[in-house]
Image 1 (cartoon, rainbow, N blue to C red):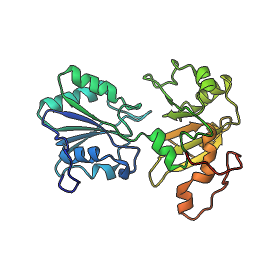
Image 2: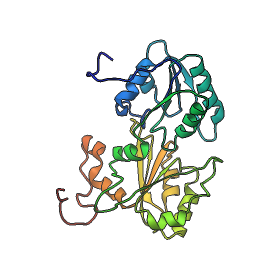
Image 3: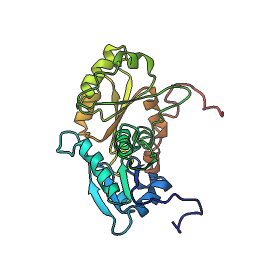
Length: 281
């Protein structure tokens, strides 16, 4: 790592597996530890949401193994992926398991790490920037704002069976969560929307759907809870997408920094109707 500032950079040893978050897509959002891992690994086992631009940082000659799982498409079984990591490590390889976002945020990193430890394989965890925060930030939506919310709830749009999570108390989430961020929710958005409205969430509450967040093809649709399914379909949005429910969506009127960089003016300098500039802390 001669091109990075001096630091006691950890060495990836033969027989180890590093579970590393690749961030939400933009290669500039990699951590330095992730970059360091890419340059050391003998083999990179990567997910569907890891971009080619990120993989280009891998060491010359490193083997690349695709292990992506996408809903509705043929995918390797999770147990097979985990056991392949075990086999690669036992063969003395320096193994990088590269996962989109953060491996421990709806990324099955915990399952893979558990299997590795149970088989006696040493691991290192390298967190990544999760799409539920960074993807919305790239759309100009802060997941917290002191004038709007003091809490945010992250949920997944499907469980291990591929269906909308039946174990979640959607009524409690609707009543108690000021801002809700939904990962992998496009397929079951209609059912989720209905459960939130039935739980007391206002049908006209602002919703934003951001597809392929942080990449050049990123698109965001602003809508309402009542209209989110129809408007998302009309816009042709498809996974991967992050869905945000809550008043923070309105802040995109003033914080859509990518649109402003392209020459557009803010739509509303006071989207929350406060009538005053934000105070310093």
